[in-house]
Length: 538
Image (cartoon, rainbow, N blue to C red; front, side, top):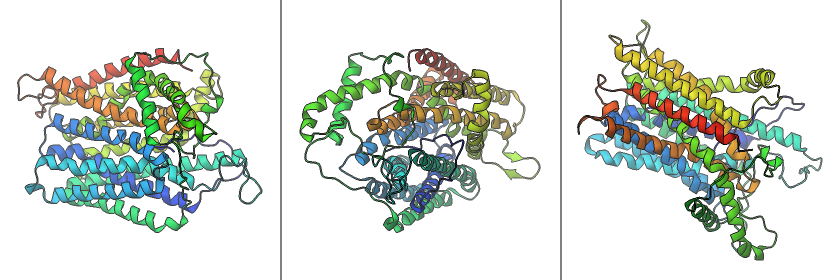
């Protein structure tokens, strides 16, 4: 099972066009609608907290960062639930969707009754959305891939028709699914980022929250109506603990924590055996197992031997996971301080009188991703191959590193623009923020996609869910680190108990440019450490 959308590179040559089944297409559409609903709430949330709820800039930024971090961390737990035999993916999707819709209804109701509601109660529906999404996202993609008409992975290529389905054809269908899945969620994100901030800022927040709520409810209804079309998971009985239950997996993670506390962390050597099969990006449709055992009676006795293997593999990835946290902190800036930065600038476009909500600029990130992804394999990689004299262009780790450098450059540009804004008499046009948004979008194509492939392929097939969960947790923990960083800087730069230092609500006292320079410095240090770690990692 996968927990996000691990994109596969498009096939360069095809002799037969890969087609997706009707349930697959439906689920891709449902996923796009969910992204529209989530982005419709998340992309402009910092504006709502500061402008309507009247929270300070730093408090709003911390609240959004913590909320986004928790949302990204919850799949670590829901993946265990959905991949174990205690619950199937379809049930997880339905239950989490109901919680998701309930959270959106609660958020809309809170806005309508805001005058009579305490401020702290706002976070109940927000975190209900987080809980719903935590179970929804990691299960929906795996369930959608279950609908692929390519037969089982262990059937030796023999399909129901008896004519057989080659591995190459299966790979093409899977590749098509991942490509259209990525296109679907990017399209939904683009619609949410571009339309909902305008509705919320110009029409009203009540209707601005009600539209994502209605969209999510309709997508759930469509998903349920098409239930007879789905290929369901078969829930198999378990007489013993075969390593697939949440308990055995959590015991393996407990073994990991004991190893961490003992300080036994090291990177695997380049000369250690590496499985070539781990380099193939493929969907694992089998349940998560801590140990692959043929005799059920041996499960309990051998489980203790399997657990250190889980801990060893995760420990090998932990150093690189750690240095990527700084990229995740920078990744959160468009939702927080970039939006606040745009609120201090001129939103009008020329003399037309058209006003651009600051949060709408986040759509430029998605646009840059949609435009660049098709060009990556067809133009960027061939150009890089000429320089590197390697048909593959760059490795996955090099791809991640390129994105890290671009994110640092984006923060430098953001710092320069903010410094200029503070010195210019009058308001600068919000269009000056476009370069930093576009550059972060380009960095996403390199680092985010590279991270998905790296964590998905650098673990055995039975642990692919844990690999994707590790990728998601980078952004979850990174958001929490960003919130703690804001608190630390706020205390260090505040002149008195009422001041917020660099994050002051007074634009004349705020120093977002200093914060951006600080993030650029930390990002550069993380990149240097990353390059050193790559020397010792295969």
